[in-house]
Image 1 (cartoon, rainbow, N blue to C red):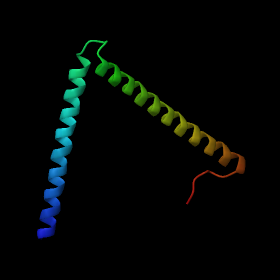
Image 2 (image 1 turned 45 degrees about the vertical axis):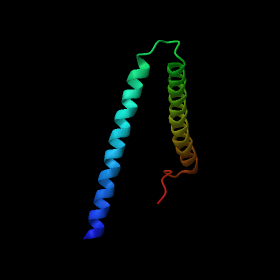
Image 3 (image 1 turned 90 degrees about the horizontal axis):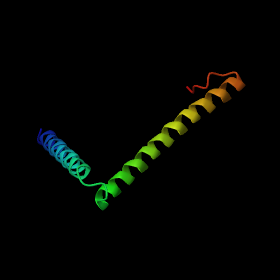
Image 4 (image 1 turned 135 degrees about the horizontal axis):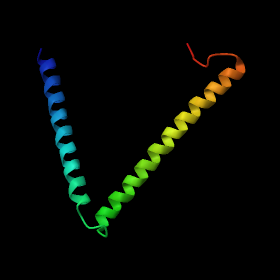
Length: 84
């Protein structure tokens, strides 16, 4: 039973840590967003957000394209494209 209690304590501490880090990140984003447009920190955060959005968009397009190609190949072979 001591092992389960220890694991429970570790999980609880990790959840607290994640919650605190999330709160700090949100606070940082709010503070930086209220800065003037020519502030270097705000410019870096804006560039990072653009890069993150572009990466997510490319990932979504590639995933769609991969699924589409798989369906076309499966149709040309006369199969459903699903593996067992």
